[in-house]
Every structure is written in structure tokens, then in C-alpha cells.
Length: 115
Image 1 (tube, one colour):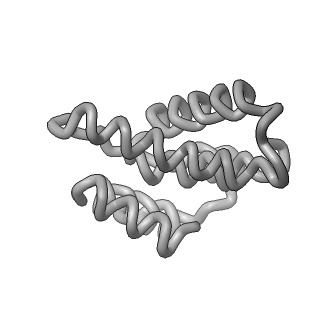
Image 2 (tube, one colour; image 1 turned 135 degrees about the horizontal axis):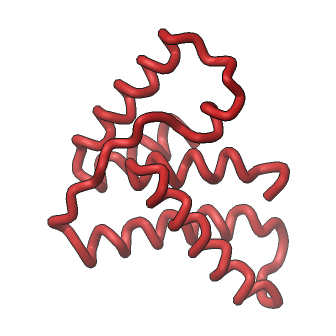
């Protein structure tokens, strides 16, 4: 997590279109990873990413009518303080547009262009 946690969190946030929901998704995936730790062979990151995507899809299936809140910024990038206003505006516009898409289309875009 120390090495790849930022990337995993960004993927979860983009899939859920909310920072808090992305953190919850990543945490739930980590719990499942630890529960199955003895049976995981090889690099656990692949298992963790697959679990994140499956949990996100399960959540959409359970509650198709849920409207997702728009995130303001990705917390990982906020903490650095090195963003220019143009970068913040661009990222905010991107996340707002992603949040307007149906969940399956958002997943395809996140997996294709951000992963």
C-alpha cells in the first residue's frame, strides 16, 4: 500500500465519483484481500484491483438509482499543494463529467484511460 496506495485510491475515487466512497471501496477491497491472503499466489495488486472493480459493480447493481455526489478534488493531489489553478479546474471538470456518466460507461473510461 505504501508503494501503490495512491494509484489504487485514485482508481477507486474515479470509479465511485466520490472521495469518501472511493476510500470505503478501497478499504472493503483490502479487507477482502486480507481475508483471502493465504490463497493468493503472486502479486496481490492484481487481486486487489479486480476486487475493487467487482465491488464497485456490485454496488451499482444493488442500487441503480443512487446518485453520486461530485467530488471537489482528489485528496492525494490536494495534500501536495503543487497544483496550479488550471490543473485543479481541469481535474474538477473531468470528475464532474465522469460523475454524469452511467456507472458502466464511467468504469470503461477509468479502466481504459486511467489504469
